[in-house]
Image (cartoon, rainbow over all chains, first blue to last red):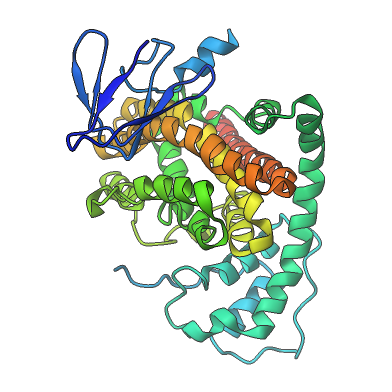
Amino acid sequence: MTVEAYAHDGTPVETEPCGDGPVLVRHADVVVTEDGVAHEATRPVVAVCTCERSQRMPWCDSTHKAVRRR
Amino acid sequence: MSASPTLPQPRGPLSEAVQRRLIGLPTATSTWPPIPEDPFGDDAQLGLWMLYELHYRGFADVPDVLEWDPELLSLRAALEAPFEETLRRLAAPYVTDALAGSEDLVEQVQSVVEAVEVAPLAAYLQRHATREQVLHFLAERSVYHLKESDPHSFVLPRIDGRAKVALAELQYDEYGAGRPDRLHARLYADALAAAGLRTGYAAYVDQVGAETLAVNNVMSLFGLHRRLRGAALGHLAAFESTSSMPCRRIAAGAERVGLPPAVAAYFDEHVEADAVHEQVAVRDICGSLVAAQPELREDVLLGVAACLLLDARAAERMLADWAHDDETERAS
């Protein structure tokens, strides 16, 4: 899943992939998912789901761990 | 600002002597009673807990200056030594296996997390616990959650660079990200109040087991000693790595037994927050720390194992107490 994210004041966002877990995104105010929906990022750093099994899309809820262990 | 807590009931000669010294009563002898044989027992753990609390909120009627009283500090050191030694001994096999299995810190942390057996406390709370048992759990956890994240803040001035920035970032989120009403300790107090429980700092300390005191004390042990900063941050990484999924189960359990929404809301907040914090703590905090100071690698893994082993003991104790409740119920 590609992550598109931006800050209102134009600060460049930083992304950090976490193995088979989420992508950490810093300095973002908004994360845009593939369906074009904009999600407000309310934390200083957010974890965006990449396994697509999260029950709180687009945010990671650690479900990837259960997926991995199967 | 809430009032300072009152001193707990002593649980043996050592904790009684600590308490008498704190409130300025003359003690029977000029020396301390012997250090209890079991470093995980009630007397030793409560003694340590009282001594550590002098560094947090203190106690009503105990002079603040006693925080740096040389006699109390030397007693604390005498209690800490066997506690740390036992933790190191129990953690050693996990640390050795992790070091043998990989050279990558993230994988090493993960391997300890996967190796330590966890008691199915969250699953029990989700599916089986009675309302009373959920309330017991909330009270037991209140000893920590009402000062949530405070022990790890002691580490901030002791580290530098990327690890420091990441720890500050994580703590900022724990401390409400700029909003006092989102302070996690405050969210927990709101949950306790909604559940009809007491919200005072350390209000339930007389009711909790030695296992829960140890869960709290290990964070202070690691947090208050600069030499143990690696273990403090390993502890944080383990705590955050084992929080997100259990919190989802606990939130469901709180809803199942009909507790007000504020209870589930506290745990619900941690599903998402701790999925982030896990990655930040393992990679950006511990990873950066060990990259800058490779000699701290083993201590980080010690902290991971110590957190999980003590959490497992506390969970087993609660489950055992509840199994006993259930038997008594059936027998009556």
